Every structure is written in structure tokens, then in C-alpha cells.
View 1 (cartoon, rainbow, N blue to C red):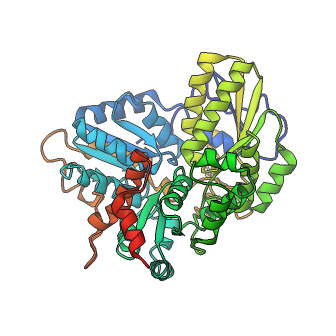
View 2 (tube, rainbow, N blue to C red; view 1 turned 60 degrees about the vertical axis):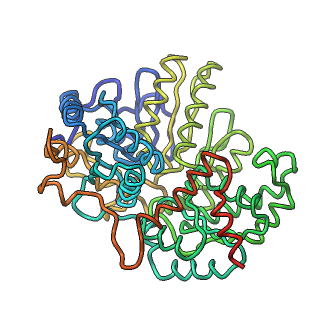
View 3 (cartoon, one colour; view 1 turned 90 degrees about the vertical axis):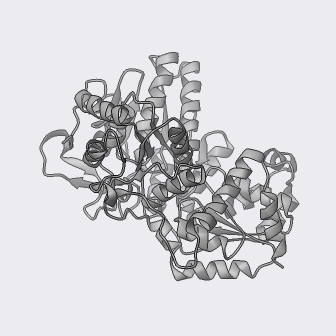
Length: 497
């Protein structure tokens, strides 16, 4: 099978054009990608997949009508090959967009969908297809084993159930639950307290809109503690802004309404993502010392990272030098800065990537497309805030003697700095090839060989996971499409006295 991919000269493992740096980095131009440091070299090594491997996968997917939805956090080897396919039903994005893409693929006639992510993502894809009348389209995972998520599993512990019970006793409560949770968590929450799902890109909008429609609403956010802390810090920062600036974020709000919201804002204190947890104080101090903000340096941070990294990027964002938000927000920010730099004729800009490293494949592709159109002289350097010990020796000779990830499989260094999500990396290229080979070309798309990889929604006595678990997602989609909370959700909130 294709466990290692060939590299072409355009994506060279090299250190040309770099000054001495504390963190590894990747330099992107219109024609090449070069790397500084073993961590970055390991990422660049997989950006140019083997042409024969691409052709083989592409042909199997198209011939058998097997769609692929894939999260940004797949490893570069897998992501690089899938992204190189010409087949139209291949899609890479964040977890919410994956579900929408799956529906569109089903409408277009795919016979099955491979979901490359963790189990709550395949659950969401399965549920969304069912809700849209495509229960006959099977969804497959790449592993016969459970692909967990440290954050999602924390929401299934007794502490979170107790948190929901506490929320249900509050006046006019709304539980805002992160989409990166299981259907079991969403269903339990919906049956306990009024609940709406959120993503890292729409959570601020969700909270502000809820407070606008129900001025005395009490917000209970979970399970991600870092995101909850960061939201609180963000709202505290908003209170210091002039009313005119606050109104630009949401026309119904001003300093006083944000103060009122803060008094009724609560978040779960015992939940974290094992990956984003590693962006700690040591890494932040190095960023401040070695990578100070200037006209060509920008900071990014996912909403799930610890407060130190988040506040650093948030401060930068206020001055147009950074962004905090979702993976899509970060990718769009990098694209915008690449366009600006190319249009202004800058030699190089650099962006510190405060999220999981799996995003590099999408970043390289989108950035090179921009530079090819606008400038062959501008470079975009992506800096990975990762400690040196977040590496593993493979025992192989040559370029791949080191790979991201500590020996324990966490993919991160305990000293701070993220390498990769260990759960996402349970999806690998060999498994996708095996699935594509085993998927039948005609007839019943579910065979005995593939049954163990079927994505299903867990059944729990007395709990309608598909129905109750899908409602918070429906409420979120209503908000995104219409700009307000659904009437029945508002009624449910107000009924809690």
C-alpha cells in the first residue's frame, strides 16, 4: 500500500531563505514550498503525493461513486493525496461544513460516503443525511475501532450532566454546546435544558443574538473550558470598547448590554482538547520574544487554545495583525494577508499558526493559488509554535527519520506547542485505500466486509439520539440561515422560570 509518498522538487525539504528561528516554519512561494526545522520538513515531505497513487484512488472513487468528507486536521500524507484527486465529490473543511457537503454529495447520487475524522463527526454526518432523507446512503469510518476525542468524551462524564442540571434550574437558560460533541451529549442536553449547537466561528454571534432576543437569558456554554474562558475574556474586552464599535459586532448591543450578559454567562470548567491544551505559557513567551508583531508578522489562534495564546492573538486582531476563531477563520485570514502582501509587492510575511498542524495542506494550496495569480516574488512563511521535543524518531533513514508527535502518541510536547491530534491521525492513507477497494461497484453498498466500519448513532434506552440530538443542530442552522433564534427555542427558554 501507499504508506509513503514521493516528493517533487517544488516542495523541497530545505532550509533556504530562513533566518535562525526558535520555531520550525514553512515558506510558501508561487512555485515552491521549503522548510526550516525537522517538524516542518515532516509536513512538507507529504505535500506532493505520488501521481500513481492519486490516479488509482481517483479512479476508484469516481467509478464506485464513493464520496469523501474530510476534516482539516488529517495528516498531510492523507490530505495531500485526497486533495490532489480530480473527483468532484471530495471535500475538506471543518466539522459543520462536512455535514452539508455530505448532503450535497447524496443529492448528486453518491452511493456511499467515507468520513475522515473522529466518531462524533461521522455521527453528525449520519444524522444529517437521515434528516434530509438519505438514510439509504451509508457512511463509513476508516477505522473499525472507536476514534474518540478528549473534549467530546469529557462532555459525557457525570460532571457535565450535573452542569446541565444546574443550568436547567436557572431563569431563562440557554445551553450553548460546542458542535464537537457526540449526539448522545446533544440529545441529553436538549432533553434537560434549551440547547443550541455552536461552532468556533459562530459562537460569539450565537451568544450575542440570544442576549438580544431574550435580554435576561442566562448562557451556559460547554464543554470546552478554554473556549469558555476566551469568550468571557472577549466579552470583558468588548465592555471597554465604544458603543459604536460594539454595535458593529451586533446592532442590538452596547457596553451596558454586554455587562448584563457577562453577569449571566457561565462556562464548564472541566473540559479541554488535548491538542489545543498544549499552547501554553512557555510557547507564548517565546512568541513574544522571538516573533514580535510588526508590519509583516501576524498571530492566529483557534478559540479552543489556552488563554495566553488566545489573548496574544486577540490583541493582535484588534490592531489588524491577527485573528481568533475557527479553522476556516484562520485559513481565510491567511488568504487575505497573502493577497495584501502580493498586491503591495512585499517580499515576505509570516503567520504564527495557533492551531492543529493538519491545516497546512489547505493553507499551502490556497496560498499558492493566490501567489500564482498575483506575484511570483512574495513569500508567506507559516510558523509552527511547537517545542523541539514534539517529535518522534521513526527508525528510518533520510528525510523521514523524524515525524511530528511524541512517543506517547499525543502529538504534542508537554513543554507546550502542538504537533498533531492523535485521534484524527487514526485515519490513514492505507485505510482509505482499503475502503475504496472494498466498496462495491454496484449492488448493495453495504457488504459484510464493511459492516464494522459503518457509522451509526448509538442507541440509548429512553433517549432519542437522532431526534433530540439533531434539534440543537437544527437550531444552529436556523440561526445561520435566518439571523435569529427559532421561535420554539425562544419559547422554550422563556418557559424556564
